[in-house]
Image (cartoon, rainbow, N blue to C red; front, side, top):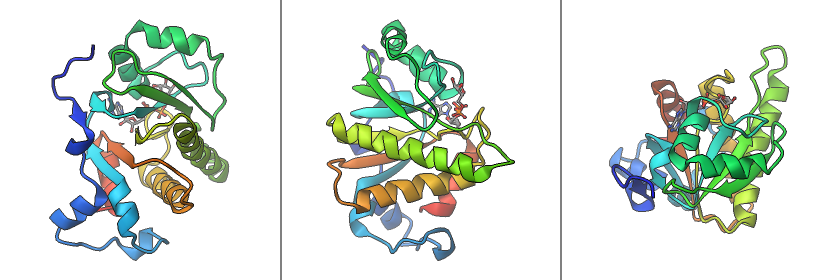
Length: 210
Ligand code: APR
């Protein structure tokens, strides 16, 4: 059983609507968002800074590698918190190509499931391909969450650590992909949360959201 110290449930994670209210209705700068403001989306999307392994949600999204056998960064943190049974299940999945996603149980994590997605290693020579793969990570993770009955999902900053994806560009891809997916109105997801960890991600999302 995960330590209950400092775990956070959905009620502890502010929605964009709550953040806007507390920020005094500061508007999203139009230069970073091509989407009209949406109260419905602002009520379904959350933003929180902290350790994703402490979130008591239906699922958290891991920035994995193709082997799915753990690593450093958030991958290492999730495997450490989940315990060895996570690796045992991951080994049975036979890996995952970049841009795709797989789901497992959460074991000792407070989250019920882990969605493992493999982001692109940022390619400065072909940023468009990197963007396509990163967009696919978010889209495939959302689809897998929906087909798995997940109602609350938190994303770590896929590819923005070891894989070198610029945080601001990645935040733009993340926000646009989630917005487009939720706008299609086919999803049963009640909450999608962006988790920032290092200051560079906090700054990146601050440009996009409250
Ligand atoms: N909670 C939330 N976010 C975290 C945590 C945590 N406990 N630890 C790290 N992060 C954030 C980092 O700040 C970073 O912005 O996760 C983001 C993703 O960084 P990485 O974990 O390095 O993932 P990525 O860039 O996708 O590289 C994946 O790194 O760890 C290995 O096995 C992994 O080979 C794979 C590669």
